[in-house]
Length: 590
Ligand SMILES: Cc1cc2nc3c(=O)[nH]c(=O)nc-3n(C[C@H](O)[C@H](O)[C@H](O)COP(=O)(O)OP(=O)(O)OC[C@H]3O[C@@H](n4cnc5c(N)ncnc54)[C@H](O)[C@@H]3O)c2cc1C
Ligand SMILES: *[C@@H]1O[C@H](CO)[C@@H](O)[C@H](O)[C@H]1NC(C)=O
Ligand SMILES: *[C@@H]1O[C@H](CO)[C@@H](O)[C@H](O)[C@H]1NC(C)=O
Ligand SMILES: *[C@@H]1O[C@H](CO)[C@@H](O)[C@H](O)[C@H]1NC(C)=O
Image: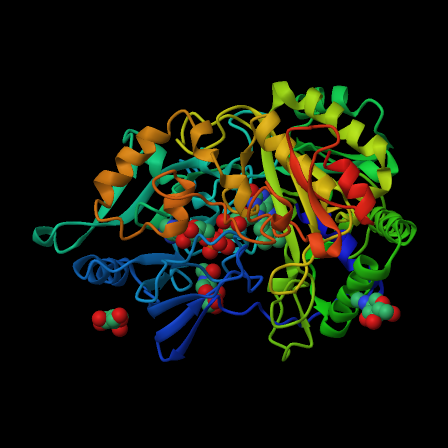
């Protein structure tokens, strides 16, 4: 998704060219009113999908595994709800919230050391709170590479595993990081006779590892992770833009042709940008760096004015204005090679060749020295800046041609409806079926990601062409059986998701054994795992925020002209569509 952030930085391009040395590091997601008690927990955007504030009674910040065991034991002894937060907590859904007001939050921010590195066996063991940034650097320094990762390095190994995070690849075991995990140490609740908490060491021979790798954090707290790495390699990257007429056929072969290939599609331009990205020998010349434009620090003033412009385009802009802004953003991002440089400073031409750990992920906005909020990540919640929905749905590869054909039909009805997306458009990445994680992808898939405007209004305000985004998401999930990324998406996407995982029962069996009292389970995890309740929230206006799929007009914003209507291509979809004038909606509802 990293490369997709370009649209929202459209108005910041001058600052981007200059680059910034300082940058305020993002805030801690855990904030306590008194010492370590009376706290709130948020994600790095300062808002969960339902916009509720998550409260906990107290927070602990263990520095060692013993302290971690003590924290879990204290919660287990008292049967208190408990959840894990990380340095920045970048997941969108309400995963990190224990629920209620009396829970405990355990932060892994101080569990960030390297435990062991075995260069001969290429094994790296780190504490679970280590940022991906530090992990890939440690690996690189030892002459090793983590072959795949998310595109943003501000996430922790514990958090990215819990949500099944991935890059893009169909080669070998594919792009999900958990495929490269060969061991974890996990702290789980235990009977009083065992001191209320135990450390379980799970290796590849232990079937429980398949549950612990991608766990939505309902099993306990992962203390350490062991990854099997590869000898250090370099990558050679090139972006090629083409018209999208043969995109469905190209998507079918692209993942086979390029080890790290992905595709971003700008439906409104009839264009797709293909990432040609493959492994090259470490002796190949080049010291390229991926410094993604949208993940760089921006001056706060620019973040605010970019958001003001985005709000103006939403509220008062025309399709022509929005499409022109989107077109300019793509042109600029392409001109700046999406932030890639050949030597860490400037871009002189493709291919960009560089070490895996300098290419696989970026996120410079978390790297700077504190500068009193003069600059920040574009989505820093202390600034009224970038605020978006991020939907990512993995659809089985064999169904992708039909999905793309449907999306093209929808596009052809009104290309400008798609102009409100993030400039890079629809990012499409490959992920292989997981045989090693119960909650990994059930099939070889293409992950389809849409990022788009979210309003700051308390209940969410209707967006231009919201119906088209809703229809695409419902199509991917319902017509084509896609699964939502556990760490992204709006509530409705999780409705029925667990039924798409053939080994969900095996996962739940481990959960029952590890945490019979469910202290690591929350309302949200119970809803998502199909244990109780539904992830959808049904109330007036709920479909505007994606909390539900509308079934009646009141779920949209009828007073503002948004009514619940069938999709235009996928007619089983129910979407909030703008219809001016009473007469038209009377006709449409007939
Ligand atoms: C800018 C940006 C770019 C992104 N790019 C990608 C991408 O390219 N590919 C992709 O797949 N995803 C991507 N993501 C999503 C991201 O990978 C997930 O949201 C990930 O879960 C965030 O990790 P985190 O460390 O911030 O975890 P958090 O959000 O803090 O935690 C996620 C879950 O894991 C649990 N958890 C954390 N640590 C532990 C532990 N030690 N033991 C048990 N449970 C734990 C938490 O309780 C929570 O339930 C991106 C997100 C952002 C913001
Ligand atoms: C956390 O709060 C609970 C009350 O909700 C209290 O019983 C417990 O002792 C507190 N733990 C710590 C470590 O402060
Ligand atoms: C661990 O985190 C601390 C505090 O953020 C940081 O100063 C330190 O460099 C990190 N250590 C490692 C090994 O990454
Ligand atoms: C849209 O236009 C109205 C009327 O001119 C104005 O009051 C409002 O502030 C504008 N909205 C934005 C976000 O610019």
